Image (cartoon, rainbow over all chains, first blue to last red; front, side, top):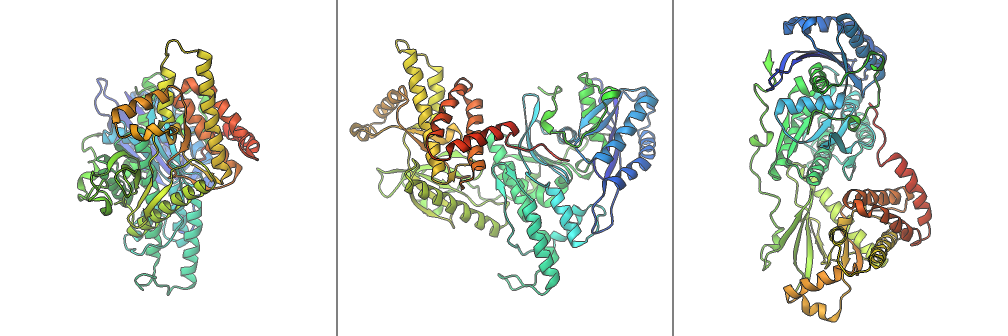
Length: 349
Length: 285
């Protein structure tokens, strides 16, 4: 069975083709391509411009994906698209493209929850069986564990997502958004070594990032006004790299803490990190140190699967399609709010 | 074309250096004889049973080991904050007459807190055993009223806690202990373990004792209706998920809570709001 997946919930447009062998076994990735809309430094991506980007690229990407996979439209069993959550206008662009393909090729549609797509792709790639999932991206921050046909959210960000906090700080510093603002923060943080005091806001298994962003923005403004500040402990000068370092150390410590709490709560020893922020090597290292101390293991994927992509939508959609799920053309809407625990996971025991 | 699991990503922990495990005791307790006995390992703290000053005074040792993943400065800051916050909350409760363990000693740099040992079992385990046993020859309505009485003591205790300006942050039946009211022969019985157990079982058949709140690791000082209502909501959910049979009994907890302090009724009204929306908001983006 072959599925095509269209993902466009944020600034990446992804198209992927996946095959599930009829007799079981690992899924085969036939094509997984992506085109990213980058806004200029100091600015975020606006829904209107992002939707325009998706509309102008989607046909090219679908054609290229089919060519790369070496399959024709007739070989495709179903068309999967991101139903939500995400930004309204970009989601709609991808949904319209999916509807068009469905009518053009006469194939059924499957609407997919973006978060479930990340989780299922992470499980498929890493082979992690029943992990506690940390899903961290520009729009979502959730600690998830599976129980009785649902991916249950044990902890989440109460305001902005962790990726949004990092991205917006990249805007404050006016560092490039290409290839990704978070990636550039990570590179800069590698040069930092002084830890500055930031709020640490964990409440049970939930956390909050907006206050941290406000604090680090104040520190950045102070540094801009007076570039000759020194660290109280060592007397060495403070740089923008130290700000990035402090921000990462603080927010990642919070994420690892809530993940550990969820692990203790559900009695699991496996962690799977998915979502764009999951690419961050420092986060992966910290998560590894925590899990090692508990005698557990940590799995993460690389940027092909961590960052939003079409293949995860195709994969999760095909899993649902095989259990008989289809989205009728009239119901093929998208929604900005779509909680992970709303999806009935029929394909797992 | 590539199979998804051609090169399955390796477990990240394999490439990391070996570090001393966090189950090492704080150095001060290395020469304690007998060594402290590890009871539970939570996400951030380990709980041991040991003795205080003399071998006949049992006590609980809560150790917050340093976390290898955290920056050392951040780690020291958080450990200090949390040990002190917990001790302050306990001391405050104690002053206000709430049933909580007394604080004996602490060291925020080494991350440990020594507390009074609470005898008895958790309300969770006692309730489970009680609900699953059907003793013969005991009046059903009498059993029902005993259960109701326990629920009302739970509600009252939570009310006292809130009146003292403290919210627990993790109210579950596992964090409520039922401490037997001590009598003269209890002290004797504790030296004969077998006998002590018998006594305990007898008492549990009667759901008697003092309700004591434990584990203030997530507690904070607050008099906000919202925080108090969320505290009750968490307890209600914990009741529903761990004791489905006792769910209707929660009304009794709320009734007693409502009468426990001025302002409790307002909290109960807020609880209805919290129930309607859940503890969490609907997700955006």
